[in-house]
Image (cartoon, rainbow, N blue to C red):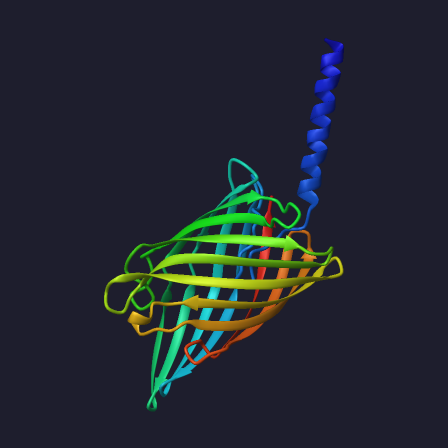
Amino acid sequence: MTHARNLAAAALSVLALAEGTLAQEPLVADRPDFTEGTSTVGVGVAHIEFGYTFVLDRADGTTANVHSLGEPLLRVGLLADWLEVRVGASPVAQRTELAGSRMNEAGLEDLYLGIKLSLSKQNGVIPALGILPQTTVPTGSEAFSDGEILPGVNLMYAWDLTETFTLSGSTQVNRAAGDSGSGYLEWAQSLSGGLGLGDRHGLYGEWFAIVHEESEGRWTEHYLDSGLTWLITDDLQWDIRAGFGLNESAEDLFFGTGLAVRLR
């Protein structure tokens, strides 16, 4: 019995040490790039990620300025380290100028819901994998709501190529609301390279594309963006980013900043 109790105590000590090590690892945020990470926050842990983005788009004599205010995303680890629940909704303000006239609108975007699953770690050339079933729910303001439930799924993958450089990407397909009143499938593809600059700073560069159905009168949008992250503490990250559209159908430029906070 004494030997068994000693073994049990040793096992508990190892488990406690492992949990302590995990708790001391710096947070891994999903912002600021378009590509979502393959990792989850960990059971019993929550992330609050938020920020601001400005978007400028000029097309056919119309200029649109969009301010995304707050961009709150709550990520909560439930039941197991490989599972997290996600909830987000963002206030937005838009000013549109056409032929000397201006129109200002403000309100909330539709509620975003998702469940991220971390499927596997990297094994040689086989990347780390994650999958994210997601949807929006028509709870937003009239000017910014799609008016229907729009489900989708996002597949994420990543390779640690060196101790300081990571290559990651995502492929997703979501239902989108069409201008004609019927929905269609909208694809998105991204590829991002991340470089660690010491223990606390990071730099990334990214390409992503959003593929619309041509029958809806919308064309594929291509973008490039880059940003910096600063891990202020193990539980607090600040970011800044900027990007621009590569073709006429894409928005002209965007930039923003934000924070990610871990609660445990």
